[in-house]
Length: 187
Image 1 (cartoon, rainbow, N blue to C red):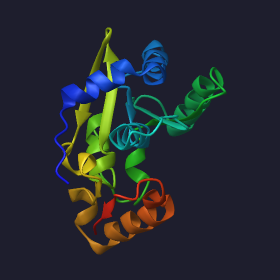
Image 2 (image 1 turned 135 degrees about the vertical axis):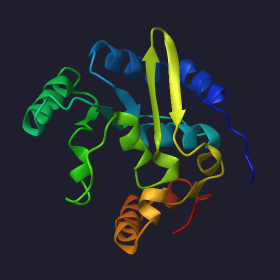
Image 3 (image 1 turned 135 degrees about the horizontal axis):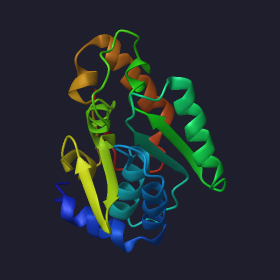
């Protein structure tokens, strides 16, 4: 399989999808700094679209970057925002603190997109947001893996056995192949 998928096509798909645009409008209304809809929300949307399956965003991953907000204040702020739309399973994280998520010796991130570039899988390193009324979409490691249903570690997670273990445990726990049988899992 060698599917060609472009960022322009992804933007069109997002703009055509009522649920995704509704989420993007909500996120935009929060006015959080360096704020993006990311990761599994987008990966699932795109794999479902490529598989011609109906999309229902169950988990909505949102990130922002504000180093002036403490970790505990970031968590409280995220919970407060999520409570405005309780029918949605939000995960709202300040990337100023997420460098410690896997290992305590990580260097702090300098932006939301730097954090996304260090997600475990290339097919998950995705971000989008509304800029005015236009969708901005970024695939930090390109779209080829995602378009071809290939799961492999990002350079951050391919660098050592310690990182690869985290990647492998995560992939095993997600059990994506049951939803998308065409997946090829590497690493």
